[in-house]
Image (spheres, rainbow, N blue to C red):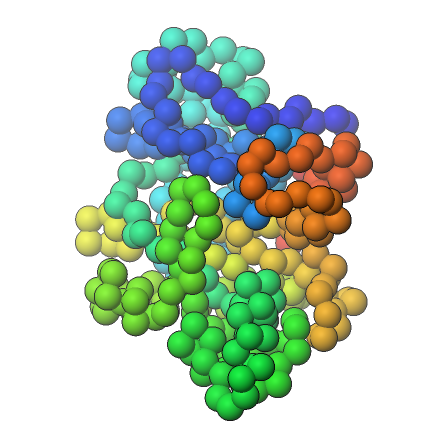
Length: 311
């Protein structure tokens, strides 16, 4: 079945709190409505072509992980069902909450608690890939001990090798543009040592739980990133969790270190874009229909493999 591709949303009468690279966020007074569109970004540029059904995969996978990890850290979820969303939109002053709007929002929207977000991406890496591999190659060329983002790591790692234990590499959070990796000391200075320690511990615990679960289903989670917020005196997990947008999912059956891996995430789009004569600045190029659909297949496959459900 061909899915509707949702590039942007608009809810007359309800103010849009922020428009992110993928999510449209609406202010409902005492709560927020997060709507995951089918937009996709690469090299920090939102592309003009959407990925059919991508927003629903992100939302439903986040819901799955929220439930599976709630004993590690509470999260910001209030509700995700159609009736609850309709009720809250009406109460917030939406001009019309009809079936067309609800059909668009259904499956891709979360009602969540308002909180104070920490200005930091909490990145956990179990394997060396992406920007970490690029940085490592530069450091290793100089010989001696290698400290990746200030963290001691073994000499002689190959691309896609596992670290001896998952490492925590925080990054600045950018609403647009590029998140920048920072040292743990810089992160601790920004949020306070006690908060930093808690964010680090929760992030690594979440990664370990998820990577063990995914491994039983033939998927390697090479790395992922989390966001947290403060609600009263409690730290909670916010935004999305362990999706193909925020994680690297590798096919375990053909995993082989020393090279890049076959992925079930948006790396497929990045690899295609690297074949083009494009300087990675906006506006991005249109994606061919075949590339968009193959990307959608990878997202759906990751969801089905991990959750046992289909979308």
